Image (cartoon, rainbow, N blue to C red):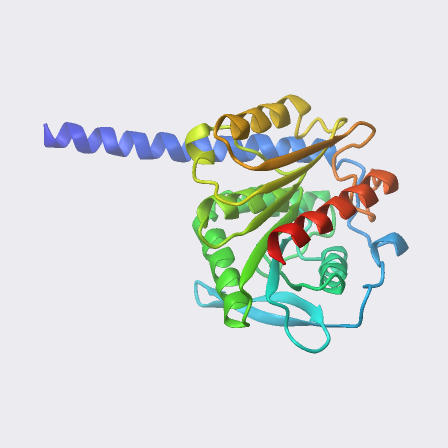
Length: 280
């Protein structure tokens, strides 16, 4: 009987791993289609100056498997804010566009830490991005450790309330961070990120959620977004979901070919208002 039980446990573990790997493969395949014409090149629109004077620099915030992880930190000049943000990059990696977003968030009055979930690698093209995104599916534990250490890094700097924000690949990890560390995340923003609609997983969510999506996005379909929204409502979770009618996947990325300035700026206003309400 004991041997049978061990075999059942082993089979369940292997099946779960295979399901997770297949799910990640499906997601990456969808992202390959959505980003088919994109290149990770910064544009003038991605270099919006912060509203106030800030300080920014690269800095070590974690150690994974003996390797130092270097992120990008930005904050208003002077006293460190009591509200901090974990900023999670798209499938391209921690590039100049994401660093610019961290500076912009710092200009809004936050200590922003842009994390590096690819541990030093940055995609130069879609092939690179696909490889890195696929590889992340094999490193879930390391990525969660990475994000946990990022949270503690902000805490050690005196931050009292923490929000998490991510785009695309990072949007999915924004949600996963909130689910993994419900007692440490106070606000969650998801820009067209990978979702779960499983009530058992979502039950663990403790922070309010702001979801930003595009109606034309085939990688994160509207039907899935609506199912996600319904699941949160059924669980009585606090969430505001916005779907922009004429916006596609990655519509808020000013360095991408699908950038939609009107939708992106409206989403940005909603994002700042959400963080102000939840973190200040």
